[in-house]
Image (cartoon, rainbow, N blue to C red; front, side, top):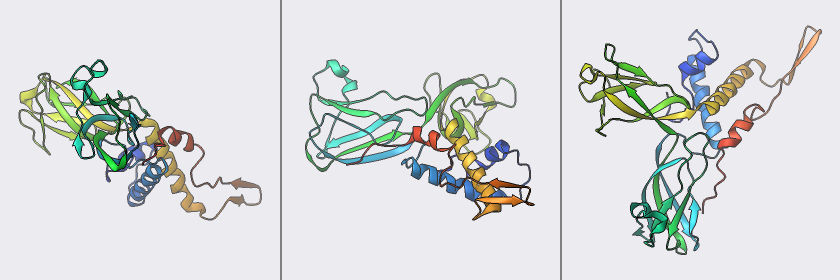
Length: 275
């Protein structure tokens, strides 16, 4: 995608709208970025792709709170008054009496839901901006594949939940991490591009797990429909209706957010309060 926060790519939008010519590409790129930013602002989420976040909040004596972004895939660190808190899962989880945190299991199918970070055998001490948690969150999935045994040594992902948007990692059955390169992969390397992965001939037949970030399909379609609506507005700026030769009148529905987009955005809207 052209911008890291774009919800759709230009090729995907043009394919969706059956556009073959390139004369409006610059305008469409601008609209894709503008509408993507409008959607992220509307749903109150800074990003949908996997990345690190840090939440800093006031402690009020509670035993749990919701993290602001989801789905959360890992906790990097949690501190209370500057003191590191360990994971309770490292021991016996809730059966243990040891002090530590427990993260709700993620709902990896979109839209997902916010997750609570709970404390076991303790509570979040009262204080001003004394709780700091860093974590990884965003829509991602993993597909298990076998590299082709004959050239080209490539595979295309199924992208069941939505279009590929970000490469995260490729590992083999022994959990060895393969290295991403820009071209001409050697053994243990790969090239990732728009949902297609190219491997070396030396890795032919190798079983791998590919983890990647994606934009949920329903949200991407909502973005494309809104982009199309905005693109058509150029021919009717300022008009709410138009008369066709006095024979009939076409009325336009002019709203800040199209009605057909709003229900989808609602599913992804963040209502978790920060404090």
